[in-house]
Image (cartoon, rainbow, N blue to C red; front, side, top):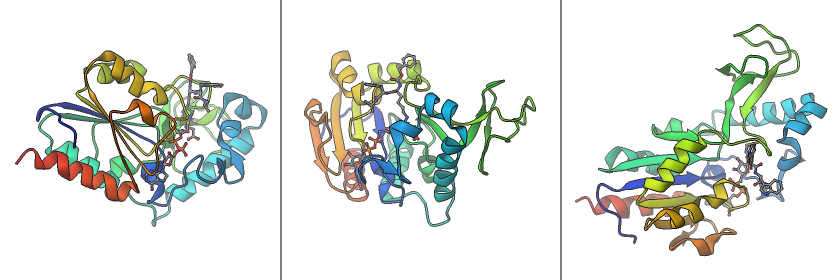
Length: 242
Ligand code: BV8
């Protein structure tokens, strides 16, 4: 168990692994293929420029899966929402995931650093809007009226992740950095644990199915399915408060 001050600031990074038991595929679990696509090949401005319809259908497929009534937050998402509610200090979640399972579990203090699958962004006017239906090359921006300028509001490879200044501030100030369900493949998220260790004395913990690529950079680790190890970790933290 890690020792964090009762009013400590906790920053939690999550990746695709936390949503796996809700029924959403991870990126590299099945050889990194997603509906037959390698995500690095499809999730890029170049791919969108070359073949917008292919990229639209890749995200439309993932959107329809996420909107399936069977897909819901799991015990790990719910445990993090409970921690945010009951912890006397600050709990912030920085998620790499573009699904909406953290917010549906009740988490409020949440940053989607790689964007959100259920939002669209207009390339012409930069307006961002909720977009749950299919998107295609004929889609019309409801803000500026432009046709064909819509893209999914997701950060592609080669694009700057969102709210990096805010994230860096959280990492600099935290007393504990918890990484859950990520392989440590994708930067800058994979570099956060190193930043935290450089900034100060925060505890760093990895909770994952198996050790990630940067497991050795964490001071503690617990391994197993997120729905088992995350609620256990949260219960241990909250037991300190009684
Ligand atoms: C940037 C949105 C700079 C899209 C995503 C070399 C060459 C080229 C580029 C780079 C390079 N080195 C670094 C880069 C940059 C690149 C990068 O890191 N590439 C990698 C592939 C090498 N990064 C970028 O391009 C980033 N931008 O660097 O910008 C810049 C600077 C200035 C100005 C402009 C730009 C942007 C990266 C964001 C890309 N978008 N997602 C979409 O979703 O379609 S990334 C995508 O993969 C996801 O968002 C996620 O973040 C990511 C990583 O995946 P994970 O979440 O870790 O999932 P994965 O499947 O890998 O692992 C799952 C883990 O869960 C596993 O460990 C598994 O064991 C575990 N697990 C499984 N089941 C369970 C479980 N754990 C618990 N319980 C279970 N049941």
